[in-house]
Image (cartoon, rainbow, N blue to C red):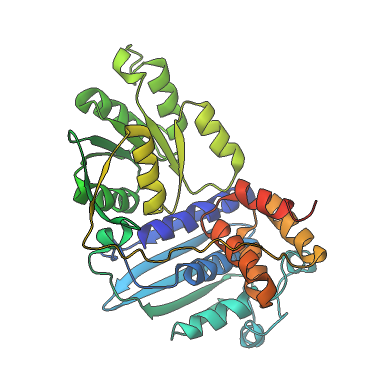
Length: 382
């Protein structure tokens, strides 16, 4: 859950920065790490509501609060935007009802909040809305999300069995991220299978830990205070610490760059700056384990008594795309990085002939694989 929230936050923080408004994320440290929820649906709700708040806020801030209240999780989104009248609040979840000027209305389909409301109702909750015209709005809802027992083992389930270790010497991994919840997700995956983990909250601390502990592999975020991921990579590859002193041991470190950025330019820049590979957020256990195996040449040890692999994806022999007009719309959204818009359209494609296409579209959008998403759509436009 914390990793999913952070990936949504990073995407919307970029949008807020582009508009020159503040994005404030406030999260309760008591949130469970793993919960039973339809990740795709929850992500869609959060992106729709946050995107709407940012769209209708030209000055001030958007605040996203998440806290644990008993057995429920409370989500709250506040903005200092245009606000609404009581009459507008009554209609806000009706199809094609939008507030604000016509330019902003043209930015969406008018179905985003309707779909969002329907999803929240299906989650057995209700969105509460408070708003003052000209001052801003607050959307909040509470939902019961049961905690997952033994989350790490479930995530490590492969077709061969559950990974419970690797052959050879104990490996050491340094995790650099300013958000405790992101570090927690990785550490909870790594420690149970025998990795020693070290933590740092920014690039400067990361350099110090590299010199102190000599890790076998580093996983670093890009956006951090004090020293960001790009500067950290530059320091590593040039072999200089934060004081400019040369250390040869810095230069040959294996680095996985982890970010929720949907922009290909950020991925390319991170690899050009010296990253060995890219790990998208929210972190998928299978992707993480594949990258670790690739760069550390690991030989996994499996628990063969547990061979159940959840959510095995069947590859269709033939994918039937939707009509050209819809493909063109999807392509334009992909070009703009509008993942929530792509998911919204995909959810409305109910034709069984396009089920395989829709499933792959949603999978790529959920994983923020923008480059692969564009390539997937483009092949059917040619």
